[in-house]
Image 1 (spheres, rainbow, N blue to C red):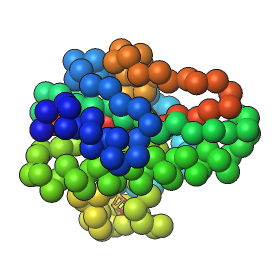
Image 2 (image 1 turned 90 degrees about the vertical axis):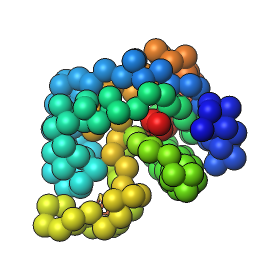
Image 3 (image 1 turned 30 degrees about the vertical axis):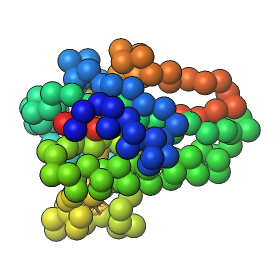
Image 4 (image 1 turned 180 degrees about the vertical axis):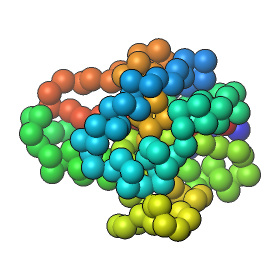
Length: 177
Ligand code: SF4
Protein backbone atom coordinates (compact mmCIF):
# COMPACT_ATOMS: atom_id res chain seq x y z
CA UNK A 1 0.00 0.00 0.00
CA UNK A 2 1.45 3.39 -0.91
CA UNK A 3 1.73 6.29 1.52
CA UNK A 4 -1.26 8.21 0.07
CA UNK A 5 -3.52 5.24 0.79
CA UNK A 6 -2.05 4.89 4.28
CA UNK A 7 -2.72 8.58 4.93
CA UNK A 8 -6.33 8.25 3.69
CA UNK A 9 -6.82 5.29 6.00
CA UNK A 10 -5.33 7.18 8.96
CA UNK A 11 -7.79 10.02 8.34
CA UNK A 12 -10.73 7.64 8.03
CA UNK A 13 -9.78 5.89 11.28
CA UNK A 14 -9.92 9.17 13.22
CA UNK A 15 -6.28 10.15 13.74
CA UNK A 16 -5.73 13.91 13.90
CA UNK A 17 -2.26 13.95 12.29
CA UNK A 18 0.04 11.62 10.34
CA UNK A 19 3.36 11.79 8.52
CA UNK A 20 5.49 9.34 6.53
CA UNK A 21 7.82 7.42 8.82
CA UNK A 22 11.40 7.01 7.63
CA UNK A 23 12.43 3.68 9.16
CA UNK A 24 16.09 4.74 9.19
CA UNK A 25 15.16 7.15 12.02
CA UNK A 26 14.14 4.28 14.31
CA UNK A 27 16.90 3.88 16.83
CA UNK A 28 16.37 1.41 19.66
CA UNK A 29 17.83 2.58 22.96
CA UNK A 30 18.63 0.62 26.08
CA UNK A 31 17.90 3.75 28.14
CA UNK A 32 14.25 3.68 27.00
CA UNK A 33 13.92 0.02 27.99
CA UNK A 34 15.48 0.89 31.32
CA UNK A 35 12.65 3.42 31.82
CA UNK A 36 10.17 0.55 31.24
CA UNK A 37 11.99 -1.44 33.92
CA UNK A 38 11.34 1.40 36.39
CA UNK A 39 7.73 0.24 36.05
CA UNK A 40 6.06 3.60 36.63
CA UNK A 41 3.13 2.39 34.47
CA UNK A 42 2.83 -0.90 36.37
CA UNK A 43 2.87 -3.02 33.17
CA UNK A 44 6.50 -4.20 33.25
CA UNK A 45 6.61 -8.02 33.43
CA UNK A 46 2.81 -8.03 33.37
CA UNK A 47 1.88 -8.15 29.65
CA UNK A 48 3.15 -9.88 26.52
CA UNK A 49 3.23 -6.46 24.88
CA UNK A 50 5.75 -5.10 27.40
CA UNK A 51 9.33 -5.96 28.33
CA UNK A 52 10.44 -8.63 28.85
CA UNK A 53 7.45 -10.36 27.17
CA UNK A 54 7.83 -8.46 23.88
CA UNK A 55 11.39 -9.79 23.42
CA UNK A 56 14.85 -8.47 24.06
CA UNK A 57 15.92 -5.12 22.68
CA UNK A 58 18.02 -6.98 20.10
CA UNK A 59 15.02 -9.05 19.00
CA UNK A 60 12.91 -5.89 18.69
CA UNK A 61 15.66 -4.23 16.63
CA UNK A 62 15.80 -7.28 14.32
CA UNK A 63 12.02 -7.20 13.89
CA UNK A 64 12.13 -3.50 12.95
CA UNK A 65 14.67 -4.25 10.21
CA UNK A 66 12.07 -6.32 8.34
CA UNK A 67 10.15 -3.19 7.37
CA UNK A 68 11.02 -0.63 4.75
CA UNK A 69 8.52 2.20 5.26
CA UNK A 70 5.76 3.33 7.56
CA UNK A 71 3.44 5.98 8.88
CA UNK A 72 3.47 7.82 12.18
CA UNK A 73 -0.03 8.56 13.46
CA UNK A 74 -1.28 10.82 16.21
CA UNK A 75 -4.44 11.63 18.14
CA UNK A 76 -4.44 15.03 19.81
CA UNK A 77 -7.19 16.35 22.07
CA UNK A 78 -8.04 19.04 24.61
CA UNK A 79 -7.18 18.85 28.30
CA UNK A 80 -7.80 21.47 30.99
CA UNK A 81 -4.23 21.19 32.30
CA UNK A 82 -1.50 18.65 33.05
CA UNK A 83 -3.66 17.10 35.81
CA UNK A 84 -6.75 16.46 33.68
CA UNK A 85 -6.26 12.70 33.77
CA UNK A 86 -9.85 11.96 32.81
CA UNK A 87 -9.49 13.80 29.49
CA UNK A 88 -6.05 12.22 28.92
CA UNK A 89 -7.49 8.73 29.42
CA UNK A 90 -10.30 9.51 26.97
CA UNK A 91 -7.86 10.72 24.31
CA UNK A 92 -5.68 7.65 24.90
CA UNK A 93 -8.71 5.34 24.56
CA UNK A 94 -9.72 7.10 21.33
CA UNK A 95 -6.16 6.76 20.02
CA UNK A 96 -6.09 3.04 20.80
CA UNK A 97 -9.43 2.59 19.09
CA UNK A 98 -8.16 4.41 15.96
CA UNK A 99 -5.04 2.24 16.06
CA UNK A 100 -6.99 -1.03 16.24
CA UNK A 101 -9.30 0.06 13.41
CA UNK A 102 -6.38 0.89 11.14
CA UNK A 103 -4.42 -2.21 12.19
CA UNK A 104 -7.40 -4.45 11.33
CA UNK A 105 -7.84 -2.72 7.96
CA UNK A 106 -4.14 -3.18 7.13
CA UNK A 107 -4.18 -6.85 8.15
CA UNK A 108 -7.16 -7.43 5.87
CA UNK A 109 -5.04 -6.29 2.90
CA UNK A 110 -2.61 -9.14 3.60
CA UNK A 111 0.29 -6.70 4.19
CA UNK A 112 3.01 -7.73 6.64
CA UNK A 113 2.44 -4.92 9.13
CA UNK A 114 3.82 -4.15 12.57
CA UNK A 115 1.87 -1.74 14.78
CA UNK A 116 3.59 -0.04 17.68
CA UNK A 117 1.32 1.88 20.00
CA UNK A 118 1.13 4.20 22.97
CA UNK A 119 1.07 2.39 26.31
CA UNK A 120 0.65 -1.30 26.94
CA UNK A 121 -1.77 -3.66 25.23
CA UNK A 122 -5.20 -3.33 26.83
CA UNK A 123 -7.08 -5.93 24.79
CA UNK A 124 -7.68 -8.06 27.89
CA UNK A 125 -8.35 -6.89 31.42
CA UNK A 126 -5.99 -9.63 32.67
CA UNK A 127 -3.10 -10.56 30.38
CA UNK A 128 -2.15 -14.24 30.16
CA UNK A 129 1.54 -13.35 30.65
CA UNK A 130 3.57 -15.41 31.48
CA UNK A 131 1.46 -18.52 32.04
CA UNK A 132 -0.25 -18.98 28.66
CA UNK A 133 0.14 -17.67 25.10
CA UNK A 134 -1.33 -14.31 24.17
CA UNK A 135 -5.09 -14.61 23.51
CA UNK A 136 -5.12 -12.21 20.55
CA UNK A 137 -1.64 -12.16 18.95
CA UNK A 138 -3.02 -10.39 15.86
CA UNK A 139 -4.46 -7.57 17.97
CA UNK A 140 -1.80 -7.26 20.70
CA UNK A 141 0.27 -4.10 20.22
CA UNK A 142 3.54 -3.31 21.98
CA UNK A 143 4.35 0.30 22.69
CA UNK A 144 7.00 2.24 20.80
CA UNK A 145 8.83 2.56 24.13
CA UNK A 146 8.77 -1.23 24.62
CA UNK A 147 10.79 -1.39 21.38
CA UNK A 148 13.28 1.07 22.85
CA UNK A 149 12.08 4.01 20.75
CA UNK A 150 12.07 7.52 22.17
CA UNK A 151 8.79 8.85 20.77
CA UNK A 152 9.79 12.51 21.01
CA UNK A 153 12.87 11.83 18.88
CA UNK A 154 10.95 9.76 16.34
CA UNK A 155 8.36 12.55 15.97
CA UNK A 156 11.08 15.19 15.65
CA UNK A 157 13.05 13.19 13.08
CA UNK A 158 9.93 12.71 10.94
CA UNK A 159 8.46 16.21 11.26
CA UNK A 160 5.46 15.41 13.47
CA UNK A 161 4.65 18.00 16.14
CA UNK A 162 4.85 16.41 19.59
CA UNK A 163 3.89 19.15 22.04
CA UNK A 164 0.90 21.45 21.42
CA UNK A 165 0.82 23.35 24.71
CA UNK A 166 -0.48 22.65 28.21
CA UNK A 167 -4.12 22.47 27.07
CA UNK A 168 -3.52 19.65 24.56
CA UNK A 169 -2.39 16.06 24.81
CA UNK A 170 -1.14 13.99 21.90
CA UNK A 171 -0.67 10.20 21.68
CA UNK A 172 1.54 8.75 18.98
CA UNK A 173 1.86 5.34 17.33
CA UNK A 174 3.18 3.93 14.10
CA UNK A 175 2.70 1.25 11.50
CA UNK A 176 5.61 -0.35 9.71
CA UNK A 177 5.22 -2.14 6.39
S1 SF4 B 1 -4.03 -9.46 23.74
FE1 SF4 B 1 -4.50 -9.97 25.88
S2 SF4 B 1 -3.12 -11.72 26.29
FE2 SF4 B 1 -2.30 -10.68 24.45
S3 SF4 B 1 -0.79 -9.16 25.20
FE3 SF4 B 1 -2.77 -8.11 25.03
S4 SF4 B 1 -3.63 -8.23 27.08
FE4 SF4 B 1 -2.04 -9.83 26.94
